[in-house]
Image 1 (cartoon, rainbow over the protein chains, first blue to last red):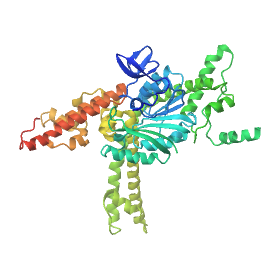
Image 2 (cartoon, rainbow over the protein chains, first blue to last red):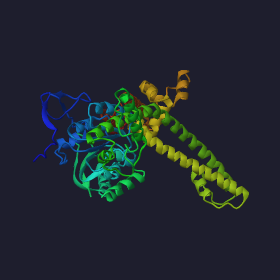
Image 3 (tube, rainbow over the protein chains, first blue to last red):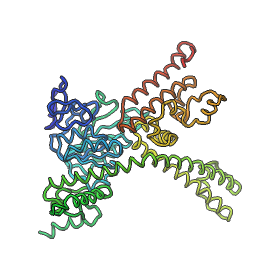
Image 4 (cartoon, each protein chain N blue to C red):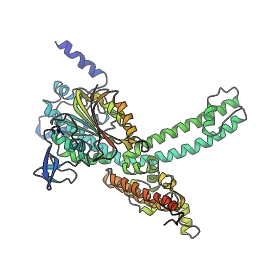
Length: 212
Length: 316
């Protein structure tokens, strides 16, 4: 199995005697560190899981990123460590407070307390033609959020999406939920790759897509 | 050249979709003694634009900002964006945190009021219209059907209008429920995921706020909403209540009666932890939800075990 290259700025480093994904930056959530590198826990981060599982993310390092569902900043802090300007959108105030802490030491990580379902409330701040949209929102209508935010993505950009089955419908079969979500996504995107993230995140589907 | 260049810019500026930096002072003054003050004033204005502004679609804002002279280069643009977004988000977080559980409490109480009054009015309206028209249904649905009729007399006008008010109140109830569905997961993500938005809102309302819910022992959370039964018990007139409002949760209601006490205790325990996680940490705790699912599966497996051993006693 040939492993796609990790983005520049993401490396496998020995941390606490284990080979782990890591980025360089200020620690955020008490993660183990070694020589200024912070371990990136794939079990706490959907994108970390996708990188660990070898998804073709198209990330090379230094890109402009729109991150939807930044929560406390666990994952987006790693993204900002290797990417360029990174816009972090989070709707809930309590996690956004921690996001502010995570963003404090990262000069190009821009925290935004906004509703990802309403892109018009941040289109005056977030620039057009971003290289990647990373989405991890735990609300119903996840595919819809991705479609609405497609306007920010460059024509050759990548959508890196984790769909959580339980957020759509707790009673439905995950496979049925994923099919429905992918159908909606295809209205704006071409799906490049999908794989279950079960090794790290139960009932989640990882998706890589590009605008149609 | 300037004509064609100015075209798109001019139209972008007139469609109400400006970047956050438009119409802000281009830069701080270069008099050193007032620099800090005017910087902070400029940041405050920029933060307000970040919070309240809108645009239909994004644009190459860094380039626009440099072209318009707002920033000397993209680096400076991003520095100022960083200051503005940080300040905007800090202010918004502070305000939202201060207010949101209070708003949720108002919403859930208003929802209960609208439901009660809508039903009452609907009953009155269908009772009245039943004396004027044939085939009048009952309740809100009956009132909705009546509201669509063409009244022909003074009495019919009043009765039909009353039915229309009842239907509108019911619409308001539905909108309030939708608001709760949106706000509760923002205020208390773990609690809302575990209990559903409505029950989460009710628990917060009964406790008087997320903070006070987070500080209650789980035995109290278990019987929130069953205060009458609890006081009857405390004065020696009744057995202790097994559950309060959490009875509406599927985990309690859908468990067979002899195991409901265990189910209510397990659910209340996890709901309490969820409220604490939401109040003190604000992060989703997957473990909490997994633990509860596991515990409920164990409790419900007893029904199967009992059936298998031909009706052994429940270990309550």
